[in-house]
Amino acid sequence: MIPLEVIEVEGLVIDEKPYSETSKILNIITKEKGVIGVLAKGAKRLKSPLRSVTERFSYAKFNISYKDNKLSTLISADIINPLFNIKKDIKKLSYLNFLSELTSLVIKQNNDKRIYDIFISAVLKIEEGFDPSLITNILEIKYLFFLGVAPKLNGCVVCGSQKVVTISSYKGGFVCKNHVDGEYIVSDKTIKLIRVLEYVDISKITKLEVKDEVKKEINDFLDDYYDRYTGLYLKSKKFLKNLVNL
Image 1 (cartoon, helix red, strand yellow):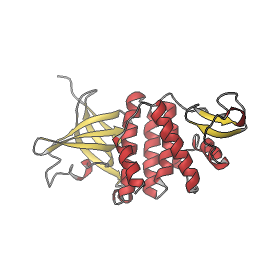
Image 2 (tube, helix red, strand yellow):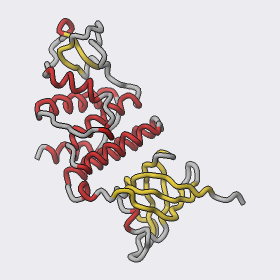
Image 3 (cartoon, rainbow, N blue to C red):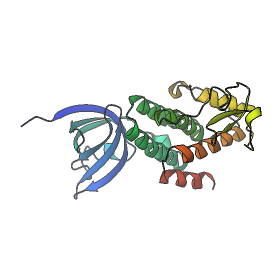
Image 4 (cartoon, rainbow, N blue to C red):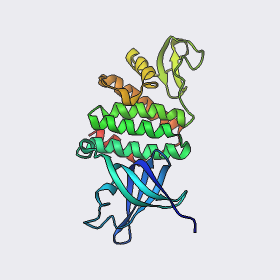
């Protein structure tokens, strides 16, 4: 009998489901193995050491008996960050729910380890108190590269001119004044900020102050762009929109 591989993985629990009377099955986004399924035996028992570390959105180091492409088994876990600030705020929690669902879908299409790093950096910045909507938009811009549908942000999509006046989801990126054809004209600050956000390292952000008008223009562009080119439909996005618009 081949012994099972016991490994340590860093990750965040994105889903938990009951299994038998005392156990759970977890879906965990991990740095090392992508999205994996893990059986947490006895985790529903009140005195189980696995009870608190297997709750949804637990960010921890997990020691698991690993089975490739099968259900692994949890041995132990140590919390890295309890994410208290997110978990006590329904709005932040809704953003985390959306980010988790989106990240899971992106990893299934492209299991690049950089995706996990972007995801966790975004989660920790929201936990620190940075604007969750803008942090989410930065992540969304970066994920488009991994999905293979990144917009053209190095000049006009039609002629390459650097003198762009707006950004068009229909045309797939920046547009100069000579090739505008009924598109909404965004502010200069929106154009400048999108260029910056494409390359910014989320983990190194120390200040993030953006006017509501600019945030709305960036978010509207990304919402439409994702709808047009990614083929991803997320229930959490619909819920988030309804919550933000309350």
